[in-house]
Image (cartoon, rainbow, N blue to C red; front, side, top):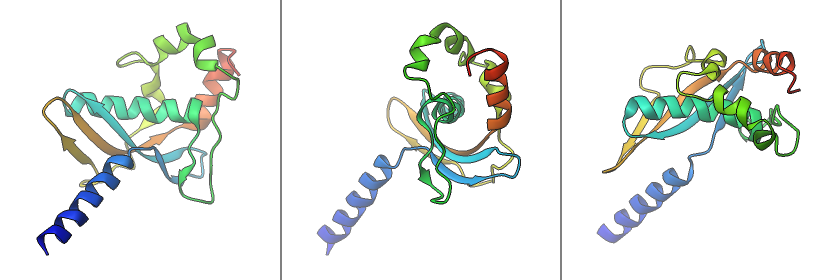
Length: 146
């Protein structure tokens, strides 16, 4: 019986470790996306900052296909190798406390919705983030990237 319980526990632990992919929770009427996203850092603050960056990065370059099945979002930047082509722009955009923060909102966050995992070197954090996609798209058009 102990082996069975241990096997179930190990299976759940492995499934949780593999689930660190950005997931769409919903699309708001204003066009913004509510996402469940993971971040990793030295402490909880760094992990939260990285989660916000990951949310914007995934919307821009990877798209969001996991989660709500009736809405699969393609990446905003559909150009091949856009990250590499506009590297100078996006390095500044994704700096710590950079411009990407203007397009992230934590208003959908509920108490108790954050998951934290710690090991001896780092902290992994799962949180709820809203990405303001229409404003982000307008900024990229204004800057000549779209």
